[in-house]
Amino acid sequence: MSFYQFLMKNQERDDKMGRFAKRVLGDCNYPSDKPYIEQLKYLEELNSPIKILLAFTDTYKVYLDKK
Image (cartoon, rainbow, N blue to C red):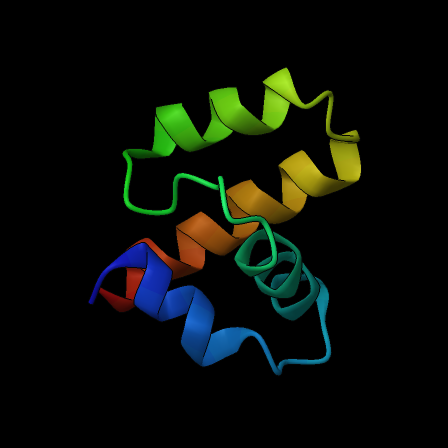
């Protein structure tokens, strides 16, 4: 399963992972098909708040555990 598919499956969750998924799925430029570091750089270039960066890292960790 790709990270994009993982986000799609989890966007209805009522927690930070679901909120993160909804947010990035709404961004047509979000590089969900790129490696972790490129996604992180994208978020940093947007000057995303630390809350979003932490949600991303936590979501990505769960994704790797489910792989």
